[in-house]
Image (cartoon, rainbow, N blue to C red):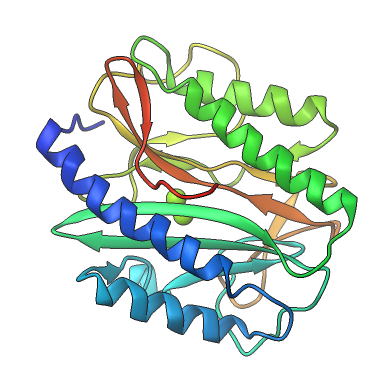
Length: 250
Ligand code: MG
Ligand code: MG
């Protein structure tokens, strides 16, 4: 069942989502060569708790941390560790928070120090693809119109779209119906309606689309070892179009 949220519920979601956006803004100043992923995770947890919210990923299906941090060929779901970020890396940081029973979920990919033009272009295209998808989240469109727009844009630039992981409904649970693939043909799936809340999150690969799960049981990596980028915002569908709830710089 795809839930329709009231104006009051969307206000509560906006609070949780703002905390997520602010957390990512805070982390942006710390994503530098020499920092460990665990240091970022600890900062994020302290920040979220200081806003009277709770990290939504910690404990979710047994995930051990506040952030998913995915470096280079890691697509999503990287587990924070003592790994040190190095100049030239790109790093996807995914963050979720829950407050008053409502969830927010967002991700951005950051450059660590100086990165190649090729990686910068991948990051820019993934961010653009996210916004192109978000723009399709309007009453009267269908779920697959979002993914179709993302896929068309990303593939025209020579990138590939990860199939195994998708965006999702969000609200009183972190993951709700519907699934929101980042590919597909138009006009399939649920019709979009005012009050639906979605997390739209393209995962775009520099090389081939194939991915696998690392032996840690969580981390998703590209099969060809090439870089991957990930951007995500939580949005609410209003009568006149999408409202991005996880505001920030992305
Ligand atoms: Mg996320
Ligand atoms: Mg998500």
